[in-house]
Length: 316
Image (cartoon, rainbow, N blue to C red; front, side, top):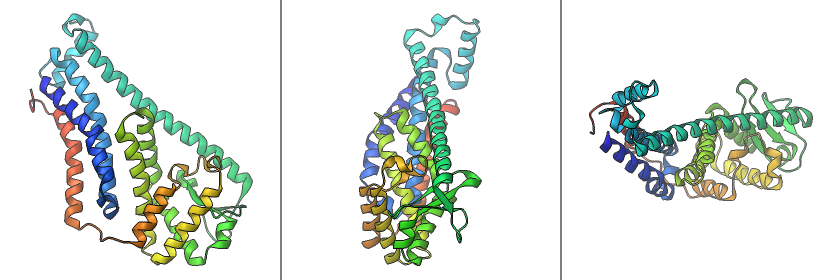
């Protein structure tokens, strides 16, 4: 497992720095948002697996020729059937680091989930006090505010779309329909789960370029995917106008006003500019073949560290 550990360490470094930086600078993701989303998820998962796997494999080198044998030997050490001296200081340190990193990632994932759920619960309570149900739109709440604001509040069967009076007054029926289609797509495709996972990844490893770049890219990609769904039913000019008006409304509200809703995906000026630029200066979508290759590459990126860990004998 010695060479396996070093190979996984090299893969972890590549997925932590050059690969996400290169992907974040590429122009094709806007032409194939689903494929790009799959690739970002694969990079994040494979990077974490490689980091933990590298330390785990190196730590288990004295205990077996592969992961199964090594873990069996570790159990024997834990039960006192083998001497702890068998490991040595460096290998014991590597195993401790792997365990701590795993615990840190899992705890941060849970903590982020708990924090977001608590914020959404409080936000939902405020909405019950400050909003009223829409008379003609199911699962839609209306808040009394002159700024044109729209966002969605995930919550399973309790998911709702929130609109402001200002938005409904300012937008035409078609523009309002575009906004609703956009927000409903976020809920239907469960984009909040992606935002949760990448927010947790960034909280756990804020110094890692992958976490920051991935969160930013995923937030932008889900907006593009929701725009594409809306474009199936409304014209491009209608959607462009709706995006510009809603973005101006979000800028008028303090961030705290939307905490607990879909606040993590609220457009930044850069995201809004990219969305509008994509619609005003469209480029053709990537063909089915290139997109299939990207998805296959993403699967390969994740399969490589997985195979190295679970299939004995690939690398000594």
